[in-house]
Image (cartoon, rainbow, N blue to C red; front, side, top):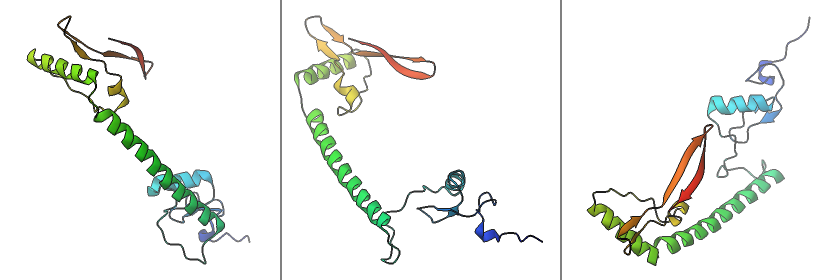
Length: 162
């Protein structure tokens, strides 16, 4: 008579193989990557270690220290990137250049003509490419138009023209 393995020693996802891996987030044990992925989906688990979770000194390993160090490096990198982005927003959003004044004139003329103009935030890359303005010599609004054509379910910018 063969003895069957105890259920607690088998993977709780497939019930076929012995436990081999442990989820860094919730400590759920599984036998393979496929079962780990199924666990993440079923339990809505991110599978990523919670850096704020307390770990006793006895449970700490060198990999835990490495993860903490990498987390702190990510925080520092995010802080530096945010500071850089804030400088860009300040430089683009608060600067009133010549084109900005002409663009305001164009918006006023458009409003007089009953045209509703909606602008995207000035700090975006797309707004920085906008060259819409009022040309007083031609007595006309010069629009920046970007044509976007959907081809094979991929959106690609084909052509941009003033």
